[in-house]
Length: 387
Image (cartoon, rainbow, N blue to C red; front, side, top):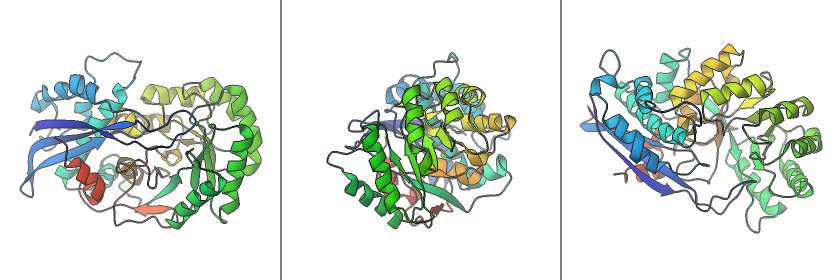
């Protein structure tokens, strides 16, 4: 059993939208295919992977370091003890060989791309959807048959006023989402409060709103903003300050009375551990948004879940960033709270299987081996062009 080739390409996910920190007009992603010598239905098993939005394509790192490192490994060192499948944990160790700890940088994204493709291949070889494999091998054997998802949008866009913002959120509700999220921090406080109130005005009973500052605020403004939104009783207030500023997070947690969400820009077990140790997060009400596709992959995510358990956190407090099928599988198989979604944004990577519409804020997963990319036609069409 061996890997016969690995192909990678850089693809655009450009969009004329922006959040409080960046615009996406020149954003890229790496898409990768791992071909194996395992034959299923007369064809070699191929695993696919890509990186989440918000980080640029790590194609150079993949080509220069990580793909050669994996291809040069002895085939017996990348399979399980029985020799019946590839071992993602052994492969992770090989990818991280000769890498110093700390200063994680963009390598977390590169390893995450390869990790996704490996898990896709492993599940296909097992003949199981990834969520079923995860539930059986790492969970309690039970799968969430449907997963909670919310619509993330509300970006700043040229010429987009309050009416257009309201219309956007109405479209998400019409698509079956119950809860929505919008960006803040890219306008004045007064303007952002007007934007929040405009969205709240059109939400029906039973729907809720999250706001996301994308790490824009310093401590004083994070507290001031929290003071101004606390009476709205939002679902959560997300990433007010720099993701590594645990002091800011801790001080904000003392002042803001409702749920806080963060973690999408923490890319390692150690960074996640520091957030839990020093960030003042409340395990009864706050949410953690680690994205495996940006943070060394599912192998590292499993370690993070083990760490959270040691600190008394439930996996149900985790709701990954990214809005892609990999996180959806993890949510279903490992009993997470749910998954983010970007309706009509960051295509074709965002979104879920074609025949599974969102209903009352929940979505189901296809019963096919692997992550399920083959059930998302626009994404699979792109993946087939790799190589």
